[in-house]
Length: 241
Image 1 (cartoon, rainbow, N blue to C red):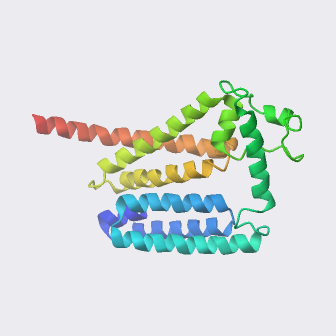
Image 2: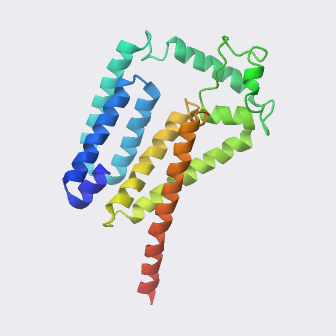
Image 3: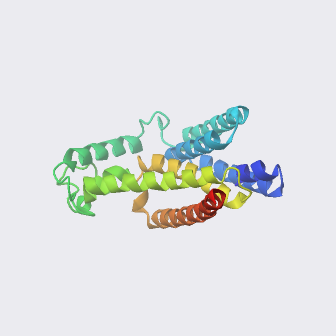
C-alpha cells in the first residue's frame, strides 16, 4: 500500500502511515528470531520491488532488506541455540531427520497417502525420531504424505493460479488511479511468493488460523481481479465500436 500510494499520490499521509506500519511489522518479524519467516518476508519484498520500482529504488530496497536480514541474524544468534545460523542446531537437525523418514515412506502410498494424522499413530513404528509427535515441517511433504501426490499437485496448481491471478490484476491496474485495489493486488504478489517459500519448510496449513487467512486473502484477490477485468473488458468493447 505504501508503494501504491507513493506511485499515484507521492509522499502523502497514507503512504507514510503504510510505510511506518510495514517498518514496524518487519522489525517485529526480525525480533521474533524466526528464520524462515524473515526469509519469506525478504522474498516477498524483492518480488514487489522487482514489479514496481526503478533501478535505483530497487538497490535501496535491496539494501534495506540486507539490513533487516542482518538485524534478524543478530537476533537469531543471540536468542536461538548455538549454530542456528548455519542450520546445525537441534531444531534444524530434527526437521531434517523427520523429513527424511517421511520421504522414505512417501512412495509406499503415492496416490491416497497414509491418511491424516496416521504418522502420529505410528510415529515410533515408522521410525520417526524422538518421542514428540510433530509433522514434516513442510506443506508439500505433509500433503503428499497424508493425502498423496495428487493432492500435492493440486496444491501447487492452487498456489500458481493464486499468484497468476494477483499478478494479472496488478498489471491491469498499474496505470490506474484506484490506489487501494492496486496496492492490495501488488502486495498479494509478494505475499503469495513469501508464503509459498515459507511453506517449503513449514507446515503452514497445519494451523487453522493461517489456513483461514490464506483462503480469505485468496477470495479478496479473486474478487478484486474480477472487478478489474470488467471495466477493462467494457472499455475494449467500446473502443472496438
